[in-house]
Length: 136
Length: 136
Length: 136
Length: 136
Image (cartoon, rainbow over all chains, first blue to last red; front, side, top):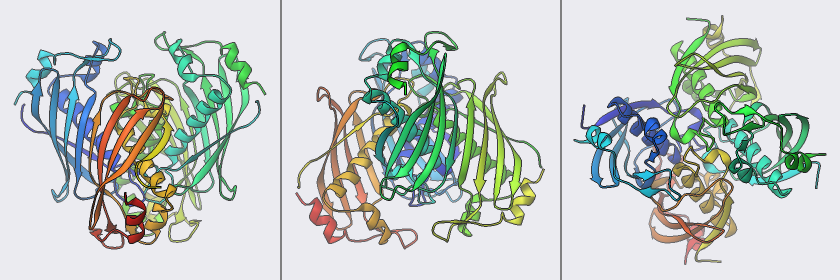
């Protein structure tokens, strides 16, 4: 159940740009979708977490683009936890082409855990249940 | 102050698709931005309206695309009120190229006025202040 | 193989807006993804069609929104062909919640068939192969 | 004419997410728009550059998010060149609230200069004209 999670998706037409490849901002949505599915596949609903007043906004992201993904190309997003602190968690991601496995992008995304009922949202400890499903 | 409102914007790179033109979903954002600025230019803050618990979700939209807008092309969105009912308002929109005035698209967008504090949001009368600034 | 096509997807976090529901522009992408999959599931690659110089830009769309879709909600997009002319094709779409089947939106989308190698792209007859896979 | 460039824009409704702030992927579009305007304000058309067969795809981006931007909030994107190599250019960006100047985000974006007529696009030297307008 633990380790690296894989999520497959296809590039939508509206996500391409006039260079004929998925626009770089689209990858940000792919990475996010993959994190959501990673949590869901391990039994953690991020939607429910927000309803309970806790959120995981992105604090920092770094993406390295290697090769473009074309329209309707199937891609695989591999996500794993690479770091945990009291009130933040870091994911390491790799995006590859489902066809030939070629590397499209790599990313590191750090999420803060915050109390959404405070304004501005202040950092709080990661819930125990989330830590458990994200442990290596 | 009344009548047709004009809003200018430029097509972002990420809004183009591989046909080399603004993707049709981008126009939906352009129309929305134009409505927001129309209200703001007439002294009505939609952001403030939502903070007071009232919202204007889109209930129906129809867009007719005539000609594509290219990357960084300046376009003009002309918006006017074409209909009002107790709990809804309809906008007629026209999108033209700022350069030669050629017609890019036309749209009709109907917004419902709802109470955001109810679940699901139920229809409520349009606020008087909004009606006034949107009157012809 | 013919008739109504069903495509399932989940609402991404970045597709929600501050009303807490999928933004209305997101549906435009959902409808497009469903059309792409409908063609692909019937053996027609729209990507390949564009490589051969033919495209299907949206000429007109009408969407009626009934109920919001929440973050990570699974939705079903049902697509069927409702009209065909020499150089255009019309799709009728229905978006429902996968959970309880409640109606979220309906749409009509008309696509023009154009020669992408001409500028501006001019209308051309729908390819025979596409007509066949989209016949009722 | 040189140094840091400032670009102002407002957060669109469709760019917010259910946390009530501009979604982190939206900043990627803001940064891109700011770069486009920076070049344009200095007399360089990126659209024209692509028509001549040269492109500037993003090779790496890093964004640090500090504070959320709300719907219709006016923000300022400050962009400056922080690095240049033979076939790449790096921008340092700062996003602040136009209201109180508070820091919303910082970013570093590295663009490769490529020949769009080759497949895959291979690196080529930055055009002299672009180097000149981006020199400090």
